[in-house]
Image 1 (cartoon, helix red, strand yellow):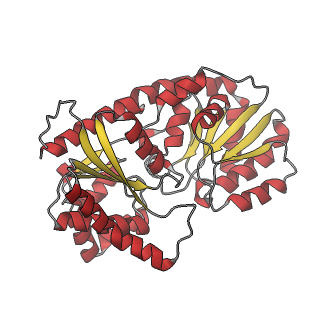
Image 2: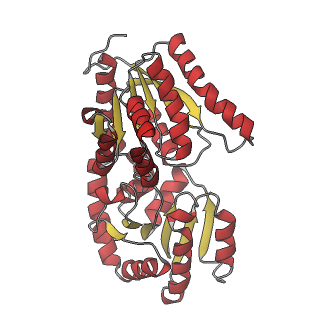
Image 3: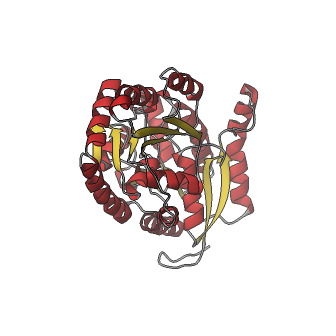
Length: 372
């Protein structure tokens, strides 16, 4: 297929991403691509297991080994202009997506883009120190048309491994402004202030510290509730932890929320809290909260410090119950400060991270790759 970089002729994109049942930022990112990039025809290929299906070890191995062959079959059966792969830098993803990249490079398919979302420095340093891993990793990535990362530091690390510098693009993720606009049309009446956490329930995301900190300050702020929206492996422990505080009417677990309910919670909260130590890329939830005009309570993890600083709220150097508690005190005692930051965040997020702006750049990259 011959395309013009400025043409509106639809591109055929094979999008490799987690199954829709898998909660998380990569899934949300993939859905935004499919819903908002109208000049592209997407074929989805799901990698990873499904939450509604139990998978045993043999099944996992079979899925990992069969995925590259299924992708090559799709490439042979239909015209594909670009393959978009969405790995994170963790052991499971490096193996899974590495096999896919090996198959593509071995067959000479070069119209692929790799968008690295999550980043574990321990894995990156391990690859960098091992000669064979480093050479293989660089060989796989150098067989693509572009590698997208969320931080200049990530780019420097890949360059040090031998990945061609000119192929690495520092980019940004996005939020869906259309959904926020719809939610703002029907604001709900509210008599109490809420602190909103909305992400996976992982220990590394500061969920236990946030619950403890709220319990410590709850008596000082009787008009404030905590909403913990999400799902994940720490869920049962969090419910037990919350029950031990005798604050059951002030700590709420609405489960994994999406669509209108998610954006309603964002519109109503006093501020958004994600005190994470996780190997983040750039959490979409933070961008959504800024787009909704909310101040942030977060931490220096992953690509967060390259995008968010003290102008956007409180960014913790370390996540402990005490540091989170201190931050809650500051934000709850200063609603005017939160409102001022929220106003700044809304302008910043809409100008920089709204899907329409980011996706126009993504489409230009797709068209450039298709021409190579």
